[in-house]
Image (cartoon, rainbow, N blue to C red; front, side, top):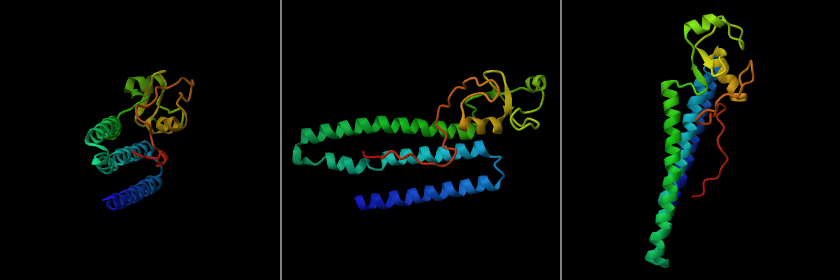
Length: 188
């Protein structure tokens, strides 16, 4: 069974890497206008992989802990402890995956709200970052307004307002805008 899990793990990781490469090439060829959408899709893929990596070794460890050599009480208690710790880890990963899915499907903005046309007209219809007419204007908590794509790209590097340097509220989920995978080793 363990060779099957290793084979499955290798195939899923390679498929995820191919999917990330295709996504990165597609967004690069589109002129970079889908920067926020690209980051959200890469984040969703990463959280799906984290959930998969958390669930994959569970059957192997459960079989190991249920070994009756050490006695049924010891086997049952270690299996129960393992499953309790694993369940808390899996619940957190499911929560992060659902948050990433919700952010992708509902186009949630984690650093402000969409500005009304009156607010945009009051400050002028020019984005301070790209110096062009605002597209999908976002009103930050400090009351500055920017294009959604411009400010999303800015927040990938810094978590402050581009004009007044006021600290912006961090996102609920970490964004994987460049497709990088965590190097944390999954042991259990």
